[in-house]
Length: 113
Image (tube, rainbow, N blue to C red; front, side, top):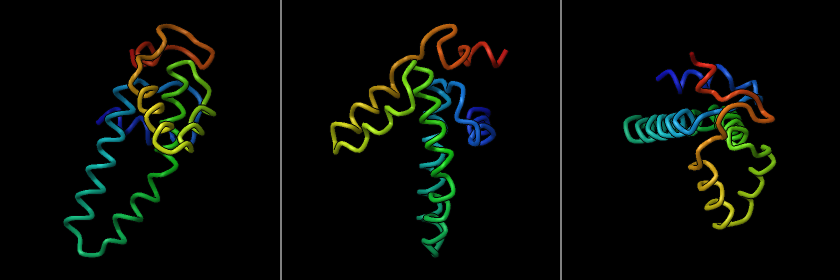
């Protein structure tokens, strides 16, 4: 839950880095909340409103994930390419981050201590 809250706290701040764990937990929790809202609440608009509200924090944590792998957030635009772009982004999101300091800041593991 700490990872999810950290993403929500930092969603206005596109700077810094997000570890793999932080990115994937945030994505999983958002997906599960959306599915629960869609299945359990009769008004489907509520699930869509949740998705709309979480769009900006999702983009921000994705950019911070790119920073952790020492890539510019502009790499997110590769997702425009159908299928191949999505596969490349998933691979980038699965790669481990650079250890220590890179051009986007310190290793997030060091910042939590």
